[in-house]
Image (tube, rainbow, N blue to C red; front, side, top):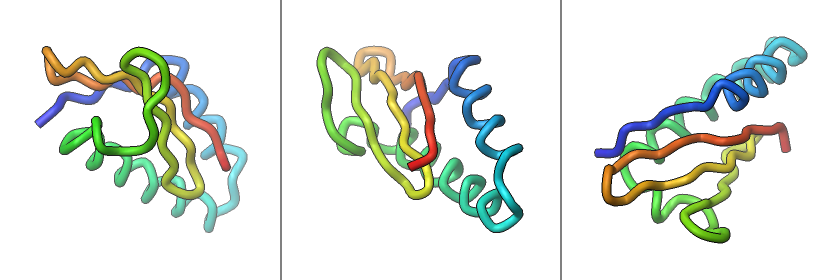
Length: 84
């Protein structure tokens, strides 16, 4: 299992999206965040699409997420999150 760390900027982006959302959107954001964490912990190399180096992007509506995978240390760093 991988450890998952959300950068300060990614946490801020997520918080801003949640604050601006209505109650229905907040529920969807909360559920998507939990699903993203789950998928990143289990198999980040198979989640989403590869980008340059060790970076990947993925989508769990209503969120998009960019992250980096360190296979050797079994760590994932969430770099950016946005509403799609």
